[in-house]
Image (cartoon, rainbow, N blue to C red; front, side, top):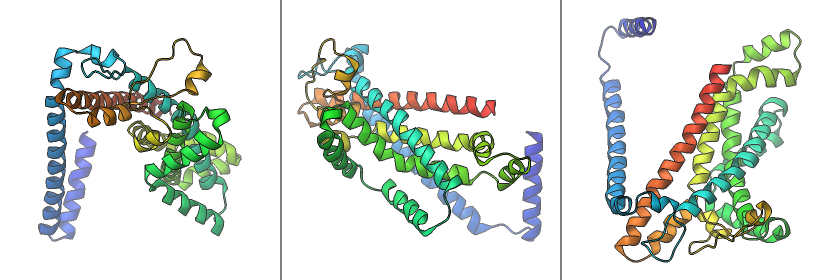
Amino acid sequence: MSTIAATESTRRTVELALRGRRIDVRGRAFQALLLLTLFISLGFLLVLLWTTWTTAQPVFTDRGWDFVRSDVSSLASRAGVWQGIVGSLILTGFVVFVALPLGVAAAIYLEEYARDTALNRLLIANIRNLAGVPSVVYGILGLVVFAQALRGISGGLSYISGGLTLAVLVIPIVILVTMESLRAVPASIREAAYGVGATRWEVVRSHVLPYAAPGVFTGAILSLARAFGETAPLLLVGAVTGYISTGGDRGLIDTLQGRFTALPTLIFSFSRQIGDDWRANAAAAILVLLVVILAVNAVAIVLRNRYERKW
């Protein structure tokens, strides 16, 4: 810490000497403006959280853990979010096992193996455009391709259709973040590895990827959070917004090919109902969604930090 403080003091001394010890009024004003915008944003966030908590407090006070463990119901006093939690976790599993490997592999090819040609530059530009496409467009794609054209495999409006739709939605984000992480690796690391006779694959596997791993994990965390909170594409590929049967003892394939719901769609369903009880349920479901997202992100952050210490 003392070394860091000394370096910061030296830097400020050099800056003052270069400026003739003049005070940078514009710089200070811009810094104050940025700090003000930060406090304003945090203020809005705190107001939203407080409003949601005060609305949801009767649900947690009266029902407590029962609200989390209960299934969907047509009665506000019995409705819960357990089926939505399970559905969201299953859909997120598709993102983990489909979108992340494909996105990282595509980024490695484009950044480390592909030549700088006009075709590849056009491909990267299209990927950047796909990252900004509204999620409802991916919902239409999932409905046409996964739910209808591949009905024999996906089972139609099912977990498989919803999970693959979310996977396609976040793949461009994974590719772009991974490419930026690989691009940030110093060229000297690659040159040193090539200098001792390493092959391209050995350089990528043993030197480039470990160095870029924190950025790749960060992209994975952002992608999981994006997929976990999506509602529009799930509604288009068959997410249930009303009562959904548990289906008894079904196998894994039958479950994945069956109807589903998720936390965001339950929030949408609760908010459409009339009455203060349903409004309180919607606010409580929002808080549960925030907690689950934070828990999933915390696990990903812990894995990222352990990987950083390992390397």
